[in-house]
Image 1 (cartoon, each protein chain N blue to C red):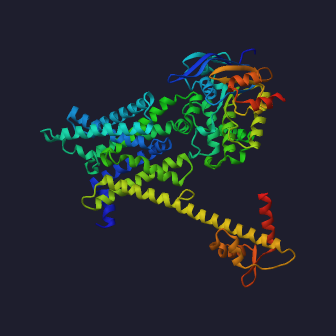
Image 2 (image 1 turned 135 degrees about the vertical axis):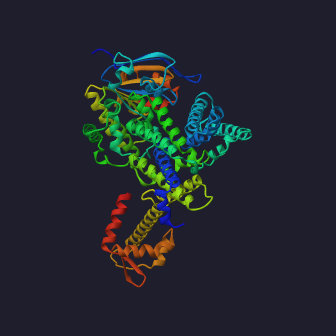
Image 3 (image 1 turned 90 degrees about the vertical axis):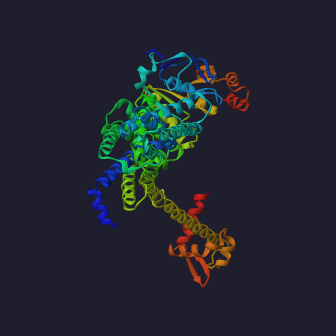
Length: 248
Length: 375
């Protein structure tokens, strides 16, 4: 059981000739709730997408539970940025959540009662069951985020990637999401979250990876979430934040 | 020509029946696949593909010296396909963005097609006659076997659409998520685009390269107005396309010298216009009424709150206030009397004497609730 959920070695990704990630190592032990933080353009989203095989790395290796991602896909759930899709698409909340079952269902098979039940169950967990038949264009930002979370939940994964799940949601939704993340961790799952709000890192997460094209630090929040590392990642622009952090 | 004669011809006149059937098939296939193109924000891609088909048609003719529709359609298919690939290549390898790449491909291929067409028409033999009809289409040239070919290819395209329905829906909504689940998104993308090219090629003989993109975009745009479900949007798109196809054929068949293709597109435009105006929830008229209703409601609320303010200034005193006072307080004085009669109807306001308005107990309660919500 000592195998890491994620092992990234020497990962390098370039867009045209500009490096987005440069020689990055990252180890995430199983059962942790980890934040990836860093300034804009630090490569946080790129990191997630390359682990998911959505972006081809120029160099480096990614292992998920000790094997390449393609073999471990069924163990992985993904919550993309809410803004990455057109919410005016003609479909219902339930339909979107059932998309999380497509991978397990496979080609040519039709959705049935068990997919429906799983989707309703997941919607219940995010407090959106009564919205199942709602057209997705009628959802608020926080509700959209919950729908995406429910879609990942029905994947019934061991390892979850979430790209800025707290982006533009209200305090209630943020609390609900955090509770959900902690429940997932209690159930032995590993969750990797791209996160922007440095203040809440120590409260929400137990591991953190700090990126700025290169890896600045990766480890338990208590050990590596320090003023020095923050300054390295953000280049001294977070003086007020680190002062705040010092009080903890 | 009277209507009953027209319907009689529709079933018993060989030419009219063939053309109507062909137009219906073209409408169904382009409406159904067009729905996906529109949702994938590829409306303009359809335009580029149909224009780009022209050189394919002419080259297919030059190579084979045959005017068999199947051969010409094959040429159109290959050219439409190459144009798409060329465009994707331009987007991926240069700094040129999607819209410019589309314009580039459209004009380069179409220009080449026109040039080849002019060149072909100067050839001494007469077999090339009628090739220029592909510009605006000529439905009358449809033969029964052409329609059979269209039906077979169209049915195949629709069958593929139904087979991979779930996957196509997923990549249209969220391609990146589909990739994370392990679907070969690039391959599905190519397949769906190929089906779009097929839908376009089917219609070229009837509607022509210039107007064909209308049959891709318009039925889908009209269908989207009426439904919030992908399945119904695709079915409605096909239905609208078929209705436009058949009615366009009938109208152009009832008059001399009315070209079928443009009339079909005009019929389609009427359906779009109607849908834009009258569809429930999304239609302009519907929206206008909803806005009017909202505005009236807000105005009534504002007057309600003004009356409440006035009542608070005179506690323990049931006293009426003239509408002139309310008008002075209002940002929209012209709406005050309408708002007052609305409030009266709802039982929130009463007219104590002529032009002396006050809130009822229900009105006071309502005003209290509203200010609580605001606080």
